[in-house]
Length: 116
Image 1 (cartoon, rainbow, N blue to C red):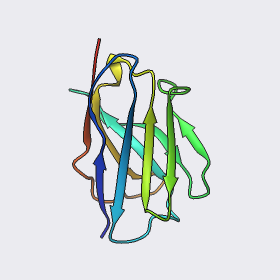
Image 2: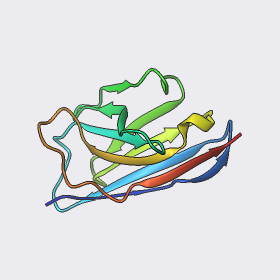
Image 3: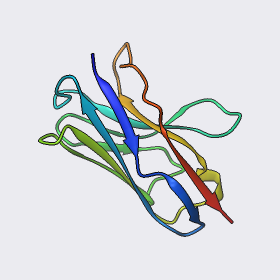
């Protein structure tokens, strides 16, 4: 079974940047499409960025031009570079597979708090 561990969150001022990492263990995810999801306080989880197993990317309109998803298959890790952060980006961020019928077990996520 895959274990996903997200890290890199924290408190940052509006306009700042953070780099999130998602390290997977248990099996290789190199053939999986992967996504970064977020759950703002009191709201449902939403997809913010996705990357296919060959490296094609897609973004939610709300983060397009500010966030960049990438992957390092040798390290079994997916990244999310977040720039020009806004208070509305405040959420717990998770990674998981994308475009598959079932998710892997969710990790604990990493909290991103953007102050105005």
